[in-house]
Image 1 (cartoon, one colour):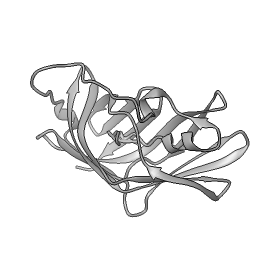
Image 2: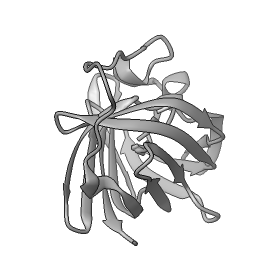
Image 3: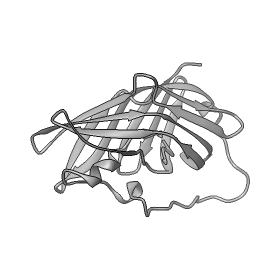
Length: 186
C-alpha cells in the first residue's frame, strides 16, 4: 500500500511487491513497481476520505503477483502487521518485529521475501481508489532463492490501489501486482 514507496499497502501495502526480484533471478515486475514510474493523482481539489478506512488494521492475507520468464508467479504471506489510516489523511504501515514473509515457487526454485520496517504517508480516496503521497519509507526487503540470500533492497510498490471496505474487512488491490486483505483491530 505504499505507497509502500508504495506492499501496503504490501499498501498496500501494500501491498508488498517483489520489485527487488527484478534485480535477480530473471524475475521482472510490472511498470508500477519500476523506479521510473510516477503516478499522478486523477482528482483535483480537496482530499476525499472514505470513513470506512479510518482505523487500525492487521494484514490477514497477501498475494503478490510478479513475472518470471514471462510466466506469472504468485507469492503469498500474511500481510503487514499493522496499517493505520487516520481521519487527518495520514497513515502508517508497519511490517512488525517478526517481519512479513512471502513465499512462492518460480521455475522450480523456492523463493522467500522477508519485509521489515515501516512507512508513514498521507492519503486520500477517489472513486474507490487509495492515493498515497509524501511517503517516508524505512522498509527493506530481502529475497532468498532456495534459502540462500539473493539480494536486499528498499521495498517499492504502487502509489495507488483500488480497495473495498465493509465493516471489519479491507481489501486493497494494487494494479497488476496483487492484493492484501486486512481485518480491523480498532
